Image 1 (cartoon, rainbow, N blue to C red):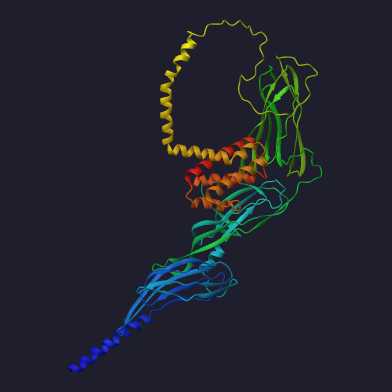
Image 2: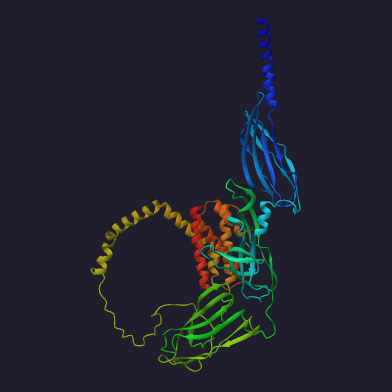
Amino acid sequence: MLKLVAYLGLSFLFFLPAVRAQEKEEISFELRLSKETLGVNERVRADFVMNRDGDNFIPPDFDGFRVLMGPSQSISSSWINGVRSYSKTYSYTLAPLEKGTFTIGQGTIVIGGETYKTIPKKITVTDAVDRPDGEPTAEDIADQNLHLVAEVSNTRPYMNEPISVVYKLYVSPSIVVSNFRPLDNPKYNNFWSQDIAFSKYNIQEGTYQGQPYRYVVLKRVVLYPQKSGSLEIEPLALDVSLEVPTNKRDFFGGRIYSKTNKVVSAGKRTIEVKPLPEQGKPSDFSGAVGDFKFEISTSKNALNASESMQARVTVRGTGNLKLFQLPKLTLPSALEVYEPEFKENVTTTLSGMQGEITEEYTIVPTYQGKYPIPSVNFAYFNPDSEKYERLTSKEITINVLEGPTADSGTVSPVSSVAKNVVRGGEQFYFIKLQPNLKPREWTTFFGSNYHLGWLFAPLLLIPLFVLLRKKREAIEQDVEGNRIKRANRLARRYLSQARKTLGEKDAFYIALEKALHNYLKAKLKIETSDFSKDKIRDLLSDKGIAAETVEAFTELLVNCEMARYSPFSKVQMQQDYEKASEVITALDKEL
């Protein structure tokens, strides 16, 4: 008996390492796919299965696929005839992004202190698969009940005639949309665009292809084509999270809904833009398209020499009000004319821009007399009548009642030279002809009040020097204030070229755009001139720049692009210059 026990003990000691080695060899970790060939509209399930519990599971990147669900974890453990069976699974549901052959890479897990990896597997994605006899999937139901539509008001406009694009998401009552987010906002190349903002989304009832649907307006934009020919409007794409009904029922008989994601696109739209007719085009046509009224008015018709008055050139109506130049006034040389101030009161609706734009001239007569403001012509193209129309202002006479008389040969009939505006009420004076001068009385300097003042002035300046020294020390200790001053000097250095070209639209905005890119190049040590606005926005956001500063920087870049297609007044240029200085100062502080 003792021999038998000793024999069994020795056998167990020899057999135990073999059992442990066998257990170590039996550890498995593998990737199982529900299918290795599927259509671009199908889904595949990827299971990472292990027969021992592990830690630190790291999935592959799933290049070429979008993860719809996962990771979901399941554990199975059982004892059969004294033998333990264990299985742990991490599952993913994947949707292919495009056709082709893709590789699901290696997943890793740590089991018993050792790292195990799965074998990569290939998946072939083919054309979309029709399943007329099969049960429709959640994606099939979403395809049939979810539609994104871009409604264009006019697909054959004239150049600079407004068109509206309204993006609507149609949803069938049988499905539920829980959330959506834009994937790619369209870029309206060769269009002047204006978004019409609204505060919230409103769900409305409507029909789509004759069936009742609910819809929500996602985006409204007004476009003015800037060139003729076939122009494309890029599509708007959305990633929509939704719930679709299945044929399954819960315990109480209610229908069970399945969650899924669906990418919908409005599709590209092609606009055939008609050129403005050459026949009958006036020689002074400046690009105005719409229906307008035109007038020239003055703040007063009678005044004295050296007094000022205002003359206003106004165009009002509906059309491309921000995209053309107003006609210029031509006035007699005896009237001093200053650079006009541009004003606008324009609102944009789905039918286009409407309101009025004005250029206000400040006029100061030099001599008495009567001076005419000649009539001015304004030509525009009316897309409704498809004809050019011309409006002519009335001639206005300015009566200068009092002031010096000019010789007939010294005043030329007209002048169109405008000077810079000088505002103020008392800036014009006549030279006094009788000054009433008196002889000066000479006094002795030594012993006078001036002598005593200069003598004791150094003593009185000592407290002032002390105060200035304390002020200087306080300034040196103000680290934040000094940083802001340095940032302001930095902004002025980068914007110096733009400041020199204020008033010259093309040169100013080219210099402004170059200054913004040069600043980022100097601060971030990268070349940003090749970056898009979206990349620059992401780059600044990654650097921790405040959202309002990033948005202001992006708006300046947008203005630099818009300047190629639309007129900008000197007032707008000055505002953009000041805004650029503030933005560079804020960026330098945050970077």
